[in-house]
Image (tube, rainbow, N blue to C red; front, side, top):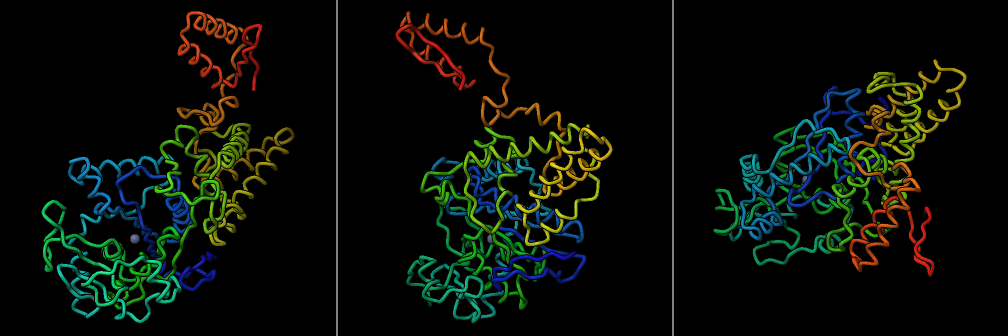
Length: 468
Ligand SMILES: [Zn+2]
């Protein structure tokens, strides 16, 4: 396998070499489960799902993606709703799993939860205290940043930039302003665990260090996550794990770019968050997945309706080939994956290039379709195998065109056209409602027609209609 990955740590593309092949270990920072996942949360899940599929062709992959089920945002939500944090985290862990399944994301091999690894977390903090890399102060345990000379190596920032970037809290118990919390005290109303430093709860960064070691190893091959996690989260994970484990923490650091809404970064505070759940009401999960893979993972992705429409159209084309070749539910998925697709993915997960290769195959297949059924079937099988490699084209083509339970993106490009006589009848009914001054009922009919791409125009001679 000739896989190259862009390693954030060394700021260059590097040939991937496993620490102890055929075993490969990969840890990806997972969700904090207190709200519905948005499209920005879905991107890393889909990107690392593709990388996992690629690695599994050659290696015995062990892929862990955590669930953060203790967090101050979760605590706040639980207190606000007057429920146990478990009620919130159970619900949203389930929601996350459901939404990711809808996007064709296979569950990772391991999904460790923070609450199930409290012993590992407390043990790791204890080791850091014993080694002089952490200290206790006023019920807190803090990591001593000056104790780790290599701090800042991942984010490549100066100490000044790091302090500004972390918006560090100045607290009297800190020996150094850059020091960060490993353990903090919990009051009687906040969830907490007993520890050598009193009843409390862990900081976020230590959780991943502890779970990566517990589930995978002291040294792992690949650590992934969104670019926003580089600093301080991953920088702090490196400091903790390197000091505790006396070993290189992760060999390759892989980070995906942001999803932007019309060039603005998606964030809850900006209120421009697009939930996976809502998107799934308007488009098949497979189209959302293809949309997420249409840009290179390190590039920012501008999420627009146009992008999603194009993704769906592209899938229509691919499934059209499978339909013409009469490839049923899974036929062809065991064919050899096209070399162009593998080459693209091995080149730092170049999914746009892989999709271009699939489009080229579809065009070739369409040219063959009339003259040579055998060639059509061969090309269609290649197309499907390449699609499956990306987690696409797994459906029966007939089911795809039926569109199942999801509403079409654009109402007038999938629903059968409404017949003229039906439109005339609805328009007459609307006129009746208007005469009776039941404008609400009249508006409902207008909306119903609009959903079918019919525009009503009220003129002096009554209402008329036209198709959009
Ligand atoms: Zn993490």
